[in-house]
Length: 251
Image (cartoon, rainbow, N blue to C red; front, side, top):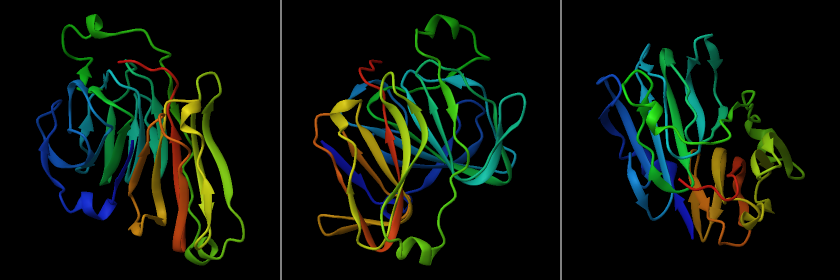
């Protein structure tokens, strides 16, 4: 299937949620699926979190691989305090620990994007029994350089599409790219059958699909049973991330 969600529509339903690790209240938005799951369900899972200044996400792992996009604000990650600036892309294999993440003085907004819904509950390293829940994986924890978006007229009047690769592992098809499109331009996305399907995420501008406009921070999910997805920019252009998941992953 192909799933679509407008960023404006999703963010209209932002609500307060409680962090399962610290008990602190922040804000959460659901784009697809449940906010957290411990079982296989139909369809993708994508959620957004908006953290308070100085809020900490404790070290943990999940049972499902994911891309994370750090969209707004700032943070540090890990014991060495690696900086996370907008828009940074991370890919994390299932059962791969990361953290702590500490939000900066203006807070932090990020999305977690999973190709399928399964056991996404966080398993915290500070709690007993986490080792028994670890499973074999590639343990990739990859971080891109921050993506810089074009200024409005450069984006709108771009003469030809431009693809840039940000993260890649040819062994299993995992790949993160950005495609920059001028007004009304279109390109074919990757063949999702070559890997595990992909997300198309609107970083700037808008996409058009079936007469609907998908603005900034909208998402499209293309499962690997589909043909390639046509990525078509709106009348002011678009710069979108294409986030391709590994082949053959099971929970």
